[in-house]
Image (cartoon, rainbow, N blue to C red; front, top):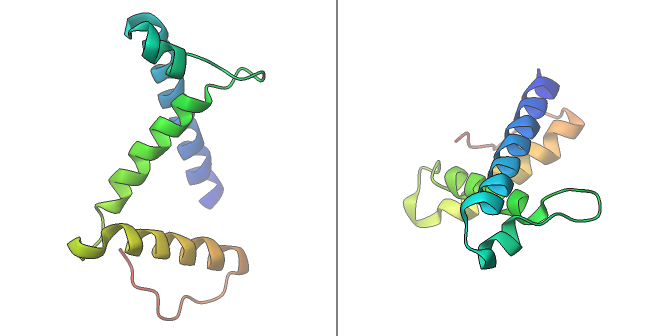
Amino acid sequence: MHAMLTHRRNTELYVASRSVFMLAQTYMPRRLAGIFGKTNNGHTPLAAILLCSAFGFISLSGLSRHAYNQVTETISNAYILLRYSKTRAPLSGYIPL
Protein backbone atom coordinates (compact mmCIF):
# COMPACT_ATOMS: atom_id res chain seq x y z
CA MET A 1 0.00 0.00 0.00
CA HIS A 2 2.79 2.43 0.94
CA ALA A 3 4.63 1.71 -2.32
CA MET A 4 1.45 2.37 -4.28
CA LEU A 5 0.91 5.75 -2.60
CA THR A 6 4.55 6.71 -3.11
CA HIS A 7 4.35 5.79 -6.79
CA ARG A 8 1.19 7.89 -7.16
CA ARG A 9 2.84 10.91 -5.53
CA ASN A 10 5.91 10.54 -7.75
CA THR A 11 3.66 10.40 -10.81
CA GLU A 12 1.77 13.51 -9.72
CA LEU A 13 5.01 15.42 -9.18
CA TYR A 14 6.27 14.24 -12.58
CA VAL A 15 3.12 15.44 -14.35
CA ALA A 16 3.00 18.76 -12.48
CA SER A 17 6.66 19.58 -13.12
CA ARG A 18 6.42 18.71 -16.82
CA SER A 19 3.29 20.86 -17.09
CA VAL A 20 5.08 23.83 -15.54
CA PHE A 21 8.03 23.18 -17.86
CA MET A 22 5.87 23.19 -20.99
CA LEU A 23 3.80 26.19 -19.87
CA ALA A 24 6.99 28.11 -19.17
CA GLN A 25 8.37 27.39 -22.64
CA THR A 26 5.09 28.20 -24.36
CA TYR A 27 3.45 31.08 -22.51
CA MET A 28 5.80 32.71 -20.00
CA PRO A 29 8.10 35.66 -20.70
CA ARG A 30 11.70 34.81 -21.62
CA ARG A 31 13.02 35.58 -18.16
CA LEU A 32 10.71 33.05 -16.47
CA ALA A 33 11.02 30.61 -19.34
CA GLY A 34 14.76 30.66 -18.83
CA ILE A 35 14.24 29.52 -15.24
CA PHE A 36 11.31 27.08 -15.39
CA GLY A 37 11.64 26.02 -19.03
CA LYS A 38 15.19 24.74 -18.70
CA THR A 39 16.47 21.23 -17.94
CA ASN A 40 19.73 19.81 -16.66
CA ASN A 41 21.92 17.35 -18.57
CA GLY A 42 19.60 14.49 -17.64
CA HIS A 43 16.61 16.33 -19.18
CA THR A 44 15.05 16.95 -15.77
CA PRO A 45 13.34 20.32 -15.15
CA LEU A 46 14.76 20.89 -11.65
CA ALA A 47 13.33 24.40 -11.16
CA ALA A 48 9.85 23.17 -12.09
CA ILE A 49 10.17 20.23 -9.69
CA LEU A 50 11.25 22.57 -6.87
CA LEU A 51 8.34 24.91 -7.59
CA CYS A 52 5.80 22.06 -7.50
CA SER A 53 7.39 20.63 -4.35
CA ALA A 54 7.18 24.05 -2.67
CA PHE A 55 3.47 24.28 -3.45
CA GLY A 56 3.00 20.79 -2.02
CA PHE A 57 4.85 21.72 1.16
CA ILE A 58 2.82 24.91 1.57
CA SER A 59 -0.41 22.96 1.21
CA LEU A 60 0.75 20.48 3.87
CA SER A 61 1.64 23.25 6.29
CA GLY A 62 -2.04 24.25 6.45
CA LEU A 63 -3.09 20.86 7.85
CA SER A 64 -1.92 21.61 11.37
CA ARG A 65 -4.38 22.07 14.22
CA HIS A 66 -2.38 24.96 15.69
CA ALA A 67 -2.39 27.96 13.37
CA TYR A 68 0.51 29.66 15.16
CA ASN A 69 2.86 26.70 14.71
CA GLN A 70 1.81 25.13 11.41
CA VAL A 71 5.10 24.71 9.61
CA THR A 72 7.04 23.44 12.63
CA GLU A 73 4.38 20.88 13.52
CA THR A 74 4.06 19.67 9.95
CA ILE A 75 7.82 19.19 9.61
CA SER A 76 8.06 17.38 12.95
CA ASN A 77 5.15 15.06 12.09
CA ALA A 78 6.68 14.29 8.69
CA TYR A 79 10.01 13.51 10.37
CA ILE A 80 8.33 11.19 12.86
CA LEU A 81 6.46 9.36 10.11
CA LEU A 82 9.57 8.96 7.97
CA ARG A 83 11.72 7.87 10.88
CA TYR A 84 9.34 5.26 12.25
CA SER A 85 8.01 4.02 8.92
CA LYS A 86 11.45 2.52 8.24
CA THR A 87 11.69 0.76 11.62
CA ARG A 88 8.03 -0.27 11.86
CA ALA A 89 8.17 0.67 15.55
CA PRO A 90 4.97 1.80 17.30
CA LEU A 91 4.37 5.55 17.22
CA SER A 92 4.14 6.36 20.92
CA GLY A 93 3.49 10.04 21.51
CA TYR A 94 2.62 10.70 17.86
CA ILE A 95 -0.08 13.33 17.37
CA PRO A 96 -1.97 12.62 14.13
CA LEU A 97 -2.74 15.51 11.78
